[in-house]
Image (tube, rainbow, N blue to C red; front, side, top):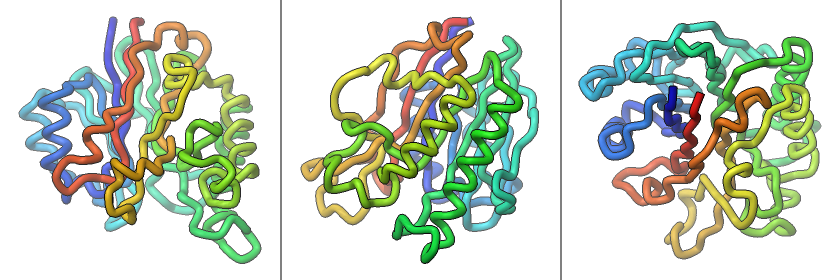
Length: 262
């Protein structure tokens, strides 16, 4: 069984329904995981997606914030969610495909502006969220699983446009990178994107603040595709669809793709 999976922080699925449909029409991934849907589940616009063959939907939502959803052409079973750090946010959902692969879709907290939990509660929440992810993976030790989503951390020096300038900027600080590394190690997760594209600058997010995001190219790789070691060798064809950042009324994130032969 071969399938292609995409992950995308859409920054409001209702507002950006047209570009989600564009992605599904032009790229046709078998599974699409969205984050920051910003919608109650019952108000997610599923009709257009279903018309394109995405008839299987698993979602967790809330009004105006957060929200995660999995759209699939293939049957997928809802296997639950976790409220890491007790935030009461819709930030995780998991589904199991018929081949036994579990797909975890995550939206890790962004962490606010100041990388100091003493003055910025959101930064503390982000670190606590990652710590609880780490502890869960350590206890459960996932198998035959794929983890995708906006993890809101660019871990490598070549995952940001300027490593030195961003060392004190939330998403690339050493403490965040360490927390993400511990979470990854606890589950034995393999970074599929970097397994396929081991060298060079690679980004999936460009700020709305840039006048010309494409020319400035001050990006960060915040969106990730990981897999457990038992299926990581089946992953291939990773790419970031950079062009989507330039579509009409875009998200500030671009979709990240990977394919698996299982």
